Image (spheres, rainbow, N blue to C red):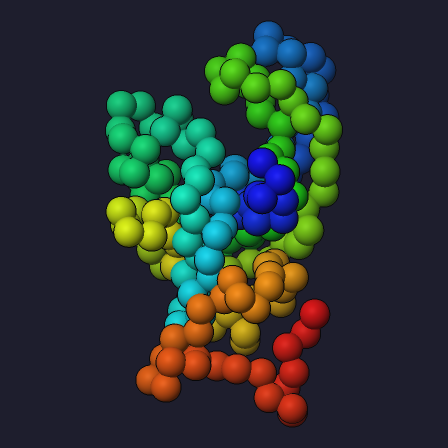
Length: 173
């Protein structure tokens, strides 16, 4: 799990809130739904694609679908509209620890949060699970995954470099 620190992408579906202990023993309900442990970022000319090989628990929520089909099924209702996305250092507490067979870890705030438009998602056996967002990484992603190492970002485009920072518009840390 140490290689996933800071690489977790989540969608915010509601506010975080404290609750009285219920049937499952949860006292904190996170409005975040974790869906991808990012391993590579592809910065295309007009879009950005996050690729990862780990997926957390979505197939439990989507009935009898395979993990690959459930991934796109869950995210498809959020395509083509602005949503808040967070970069996390660890998975938030589950509202139903018994269902997911995990204990609730301590609450850790996100590393960053910002609004983006998700265009598509899916699974490719070669690269794993992927999510495509509108906008180039260097131009539109300001608060999440900015601490990503340069070796983890693959630049593509007509000259295979994509949009790169210049002296007049340096990459913000």
